[in-house]
View 1 (cartoon, rainbow, N blue to C red):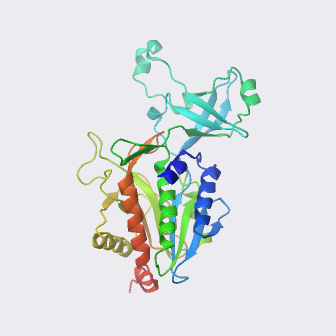
View 2 (cartoon, one colour):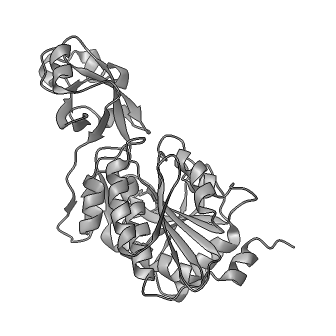
Length: 354
């Protein structure tokens, strides 16, 4: 899990993904993959197996949700705006990193102690526009002297940890460093496996702010089949979900429906068939409250058979999240077995409608 730890602890909000991109570059070069990038910064490694075609795309996304500094007040506090979706209630009193040009600063999203809250304030959800980051400065001039500027990225702080069950991983940015890890690990395992295709594994940029890298990356990769590797929402906490909802430790997720895509049904069924044949547990995910990069991949040119495969995660789009190590390992197993089955004839059949 050292690679996943390194990926999650790297700082890479939307538009500022360089630190994560550097890790992916290093991992893809280890397997002698041919590196490809688009003009937005998405990165992929291409590795030919038994044939140049079909071209199988495996894509996580580099970015995590975070913030950007938008104002420095006269008193030296920082105002900020979100990069990605946040619920204001999870923000107060959280520690954050502000990445300046020459160093990284630690700050805290300020909050009032309960002793001085009015009765009205106690029952109020504090809006983000009224929040500020305290970096211990005493004036705007001091902040500028230190090297903090409007436009600097702000990243939540949460160290990587494996909890006492030796399975639950707690970290920031599991959405979607898990997808980056899956892409890197699958291409690593396939270097010693026969596969009748060419694999292009890597990650896009700016998924959290509108699937932007997913719009440009297919022009670079030119896939015949695309897999978006991402997390889904675990609904296994007290009072949440039900028996048919995603849970930690019950296997990787195969997404049947989200707000951006209905997957290629033949591809979906093939993945399920392989999972059952290989005794790999899996879960079905349906969610209308969000989407993934596959929402763009499947609309590329005349259309690309696409599917989302990932793992369930608790508490995403906050400073901390959880996934199951066992789910991550089974997702790798499933993806490796699927890629090994995708030869030219089978891929042509995915889009044969007459």
